[in-house]
Length: 499
Image: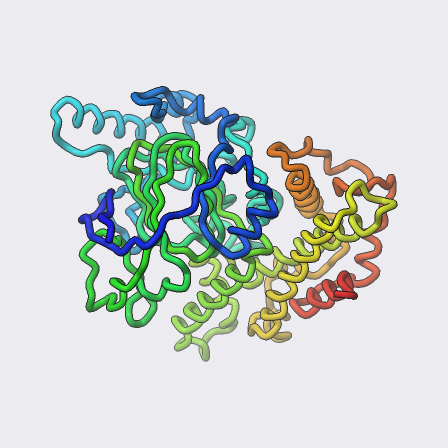
């Protein structure tokens, strides 16, 4: 039994292991997939941030070669209109109370509290924790870091760079912690700030890099996640350092935790569905991405499916007086979870089309720069995993003929006309980015190819050598309209006839 350090009341939990730590420079992508991403296990990677400008610009040298946050640099160079800040001393439902303030106000509060502590020897450091700062979106011309190759197969952020998450007008403008324009964040917090126990949005993967500072992570494997819930499996423990009520959470003390102290310049990979609580042991700046791809796509669908059941049960008593009950369920699902069934279907439809295009190229050696078993494996695996998820979606009430007939025009046009999708600039940008990501993985490079113009003639695939490519015509020959998951399965079966 190990003593917890950080926020909360100092409760003891049973720590039974440590997160593995590896040199990221000596690890291949396929090894990372086989050892961590596919089996869904955490790992700490070292040696991947040495070239990041943020490691110099955002920090200054402190004692013992420890870097500290360069707060004046942020106030002077990144005067975001408003940043989102969590007050770690105040609970609001299942999270900390959220505030909005300017970057200068955040820095002033931090400095004021630090000066009080250092001059009097009493008081507390700032309890305010800047979170979920969409730095890449707000400052696209400032390259603070490059995403390591292990994490570039990021379908979530690829998609949001070129598409809206929601097509319904009454959902599209709804913004909160789970409804975002992207899922690339910067966090800045003083020693003692922390994040309550949670599993990540969409049950995505995440990676988190410490630009400076140290963090303590406590992880609980998905197989034990039921132990932190109440008897009804609705409410979960907020803070594992609190005196957790045995009456409310009768099995909590059975939980076995895995621990990790993450040092500066280290990156931690957080797998899908692993609940975790995190403490800043020093003043810390971190860069965090949430992401998913074919390896954890089933986690996303399973979450949507379970949350839809909850949304449906919550309003079941008004079904008989509701004009479009399923539409209301989907609207509530999008607001609470960050996407709904139609958002997700439109999302996977585009990745089916992009992967079919890339697979076509790597299977034509006379037309492609790359024709390797590894490249073929990527696209075949992606399509097979999407097919597995789409097959489960067929029976969902949302995709019945009756409900598909009354979906919004925005959803209908986004999911149906294949020719329109393939000619859309957003899809072409997505296809191009996916193609470049796999080229990045294949070459083991951190920096992708220079972005090509969307209006260039011919194919946007990195692998294509032809001046004229008819892959789009081939796809529309097989299928011009995708009406629902069943059509998507049929398209994948056409692309993978012998598998």
